Length: 478
Image (cartoon, rainbow, N blue to C red):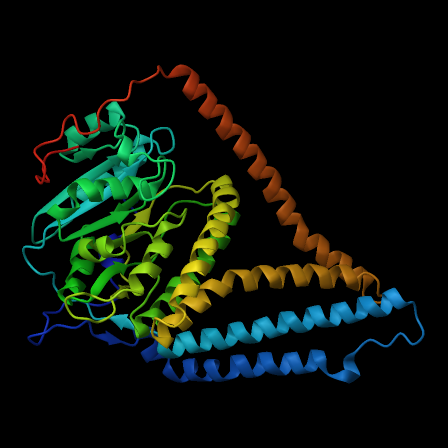
């Protein structure tokens, strides 16, 4: 349930009021963000000054008169000075690139003009559930929010239950929600590929294979996020444009979160506030965020959700490389500043420090391979956007490594030794605290999983489609 302190519908619509589409052939229209219009002069000054100041700092660091001179000192100390100088120079060079990227994003950022949905669009809302991983209380909150959504057309709410949980079935019956499970169907539970067992993309692809043809669009949010009543009203109107493949929105969390997730959330805020809005300029915002709406035909053309821990980004990149067969134009996407859903409750540190590094490694492996395929097959603006998406996290990681290396080398300097030790202690203390907290939470979670597994009787795999209605009927449950 949405928290009392957050008025989702009143505060989650910064794109402006819904308008009626104009013209015989509707195309999504964009405008500058409202705050940018109000502070245009300040934005222009910041865009001009940020790269200039960062460039001056780089010149100051690399100016020959500022190099350390040890005379005939030990060779390893001279080498350490050189490495420290290069490290600081690389840090400032990355800072210059980051300032230039932010300046570019601010200059091209656009927000879409929302329009009313097209009546009669057949739409499904999907929510995934893995028994033992997400408590049913969070699933209930998401489903209760989903059944209250407004949509001027047929709308079916589905729970995609990975384990065919009897309690989940009872919850679906109570709320009037359709239940789907792939448990017991061999072709939907492979060791790898589109229907890989135990994965989110395999769960979605199984539903897509069984029920996807019955719908024009489907929407989804992360489990534990509560969609607003106007979620579909604010997003589905863009699909009047036949070349729009998907619409994404930003993240918003109202519950308390530990320091680690708060820091990660601040990075996401910059990403959604600038990078995604800049993607609107080129019709290619990344397929990521709390909730989104997808055109079933475009997703099928891309082969469904791709095999990746972060299947959203990989799938979005694949869609952006394809053309709409009806118009011959590249598929486009839209990022709306309207908040699609609100997450309730805290995020565990273990989720941040264990799942995110693994998903990041997996995502970059997939994206780099797709990037190589798309190098000469997509528009320059889209290629620039995905290039910035690919390099921003590695650049941040390399910058941190060079910063630590510079601090270690500064210890060798007698004047800077005290400051260097203080800086290293300050930087490493939170990492040590978070590491111990993560290990403790992982041990506690493993103990809970073992106790839950020991107390739960073995369940025979039932045919996943035993309770299904005739094929093609979206109202048939699983």
